[in-house]
Image (cartoon, rainbow, N blue to C red; front, side, top):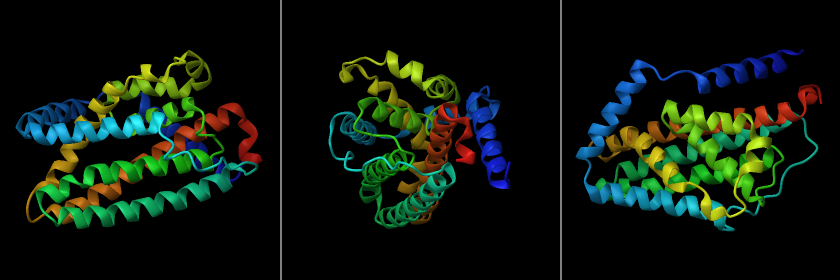
Length: 246
């Protein structure tokens, strides 16, 4: 086993353990703090965030906006990882720049960052899926993308549930309803909204919004990108354990 192969296996093992660990005391305190902050945030702000996430989720499931990329075939895992890492770096820098601009523009311009950032994240996930060789024209692959999103941005309790779906994807995908309208987008948007509020609300504070927008957007996109890498690595290696030597 080469140094690269060992590094991939080690990273994947650490990620799998993190996805399955029990909620920590700190995590429970963070959730409690999020609930307190949510009660302070004006209902109009909550409505904007909820509507944005709902629209984006439905666009992913039903729309053709993200379906233009074709799956990349015939490459090794190392080649796929390299291409994905470059795209993650591009989206990290793009989202950080966008967060800095909107964060410096005051409350309502900062609010505009929510749909922009969500769109960048989804576009990145569709590119990552294609680079790992999966066809997003299949609605089940689009559901997988939403599950990856939840793995990155959910409470630990919810993350444990979603991880089991992802880890056992061949079986779970066969159980998905034929009717795409039955997808539980409501739970998806609530989990994402509750997770994102704590980090992003500071961007609305005058004087520090720009700095917060740069740092938070960069870190959130990086977190999502690494989650996606490991989720797709896990699928590929489960289907073909010899892929690292491919």
